[in-house]
Length: 406
Image 1 (cartoon, one colour):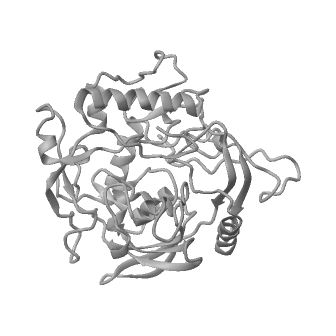
Image 2 (cartoon, helix red, strand yellow):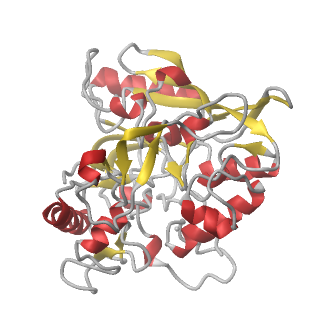
Image 3 (cartoon, one colour):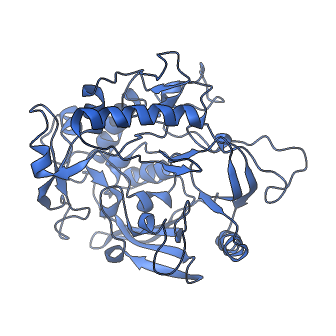
């Protein structure tokens, strides 16, 4: 979603003289990449950690529903909006705690830091471990919650600690990587979005609100081992080989751009010719199913089958891939969707539908310019039910659904 991989945070059209924290409540459509969603009761832009913590703490004490927002790239919000307070972390900046050949680079950034800007800097500085995660929209704080991943790389392999505000205990805590419960598109942080032994439910904001993220990245001009066949082919290397990180980033941006999986261009950018509705999406709407090896055996012979690796590297002495779990197999949600009969551009009422599958990639549900949350949900249900009928596999949505159910 040539691209300019990053669209600046939207400039909100506030009424003259309106204060950001009390008197202006934008529609969530202005704050999300799907561009749907009604207004919030209240809206706050937190410019400091203290402001973020105090806003969350006060909302919890008052029993007010809370939605902490980053880049808005992983949300589908109801057309009625959000009956509570929306808090958007707008902090940015990277602190380099250490950088040496023995320990690598130890860096920390606030939750509001733009993710792709961090990746771009990592490649420029020869910090290894996130180059294949180029072009993913969103913020640093959201990255470990979802354990973002692409082209065989996951952020879990780079995170060292996450500082959070624990809403249950009303205090700041530092969670080391071993306590974060990383898995495929999940973590302890994401799991805490629902009720647990210490209260809740915390939905749609997890019990643990990310304040900042620390990462440990190796130094070098070559990437981590390439784990994804499509990326390896693009780079003309073998799976498991390494390549110049700058070339990996360029290849990933090109692949994502061809699939409509980068943010749309900034209307203020030179040469802007209009919106690309294939990029009005939440990226991949469904996660790739991870199924038991026995269930994978029942799929058609040409269905993709990928190894399921642990989310952390298998060794600490050099860049490496995670260990393979032979009992599990990952298959392709896009393949299942296409082979269940849903083509690129599919819409519930035809190609002119306000919400359709992307014309570039069937895994993205897109807003063609006038879609509502209800339109996108109808499309998601149609696709999900069709895949169940065809293959007996239930696709799981990747975005957080706010005020709606699938």
